Image (cartoon, rainbow, N blue to C red; front, side, top):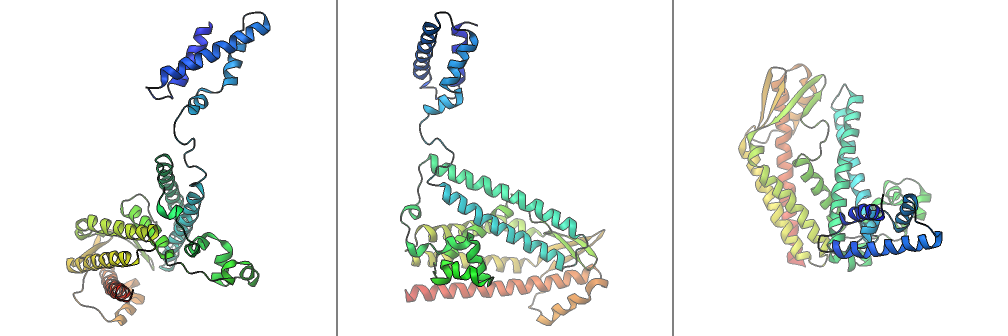
Length: 370
């Protein structure tokens, strides 16, 4: 193989990694460098270099991917050292929240009488790892875009010491203090000595939960057990009524809006009145969504074998004592189960509406007082 064959093959591999407008200049520069090194080698040996010796020279110069990277503009890494700590914290916090969510899902399935605990645990682990991979991909994509587009939100550079309380979230010692586990951990934890309170911490958790809900709503992650009812020997499936298709986009917008409000709260910690006003608007929209669900009447269809029953609004707020019938439904058939689930959903909508109304009034009071 001639010098030209070896060099051109090497340069072609380098050029494939370079921008089109720079290839010719860079490859000409590299060609001159390689030829000069081969000539120097041959002068030292007093003979023509062998193919193996020529490849040694090219290896000393570097792999084509590495050589091309030296001429590439911009960062050399996907996520640089400046952003990596934030990526790592996001991963830790996100994995903790995912673990809690899937653990609660598993506990609920266990408490409702699932007869396949091992299968439920396997599904929970599978769902957790799938959600963790999705979280990793999303955070990495966001970090890479910020790194290569040189995007630096204001809260990365204009932080305050009073805003650092939320970063104790991933500290095991802080969790021990919170849960009351061990005096030694409490004595060593800075949080035990100086209790820091950061109003923005609710925005961190709210942003993570909003993102988690959006991913689930779009079908990017799945929680085992949702869509199935297993209680005291009964194994049935839930199918959504048309109202959920009708409200799919409004609910998605509501969740995304909540996430944006929390993001604004993090990026602009001083703009409290703006954040409170946006929270009022979001809560009012959530109240409207609950009203639409209540008005729809039909919520779900419960199916077991060839038998079906509608889970729908009873048209009034049932007595709380009506929930006691849930203890006696194991031998009463699908229709009674549907009625009990209707009662539970009705109460859930009622309590949720009261909470949203309370949040709206609370934000009004804060704006008036601030």
